[in-house]
Amino acid sequence: MGRKTCLILGGARSGKSSHGEKLARQAAGNLHYVATAEALDAEMEARIARHKAARGEGWQTHEAPLDLVACLEGLVRTERPVVLVDCLTLWATNLILRDMDIGRAGDGLAGFVADCPYPLFLVANEVGLGIVPDNALARKFRDEAGLLNQKVAAAADTVIFMAAGLPMTMKPTS
Image (tube, rainbow, N blue to C red):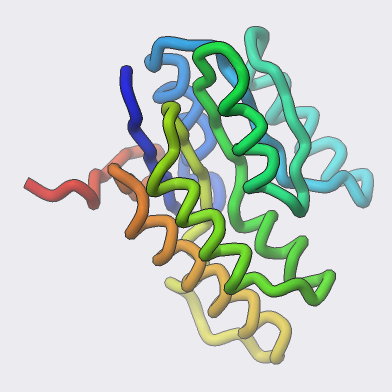
């Protein structure tokens, strides 16, 4: 499989991660999982452990809570990489909470996605389908996550929306 980048969007528990894992396994190459989550409490530690157990064997895990693009660039030098990033929404959260420039970081990621030389699957939450949040930080998060998703979707070859475990291809359209 040549260059193919895919953004997988959806709500919580929509099947995004498992679908991304399935697509990555179907690609020919060595499986790399890029985790953006940080285990800052017991609940997140348990969530990470569940994801890791569900993924099973055969994945090399890389942690990139902040410098995602540098991690992805480093994987170019590995043998036949197939990469799953889970998830862009947590990455955005990490950047926002550290008051980093998420717009510039998103531009850098979209640039990498557009020219990525290996199969790359990126998971992100679609957070803009609900009510308007009642506080400034939550509104900033919703807006920045939506803008990040737009940038990556524009750069990706394929965009899939997950709902109730069902994949719906949004890009390319036929």
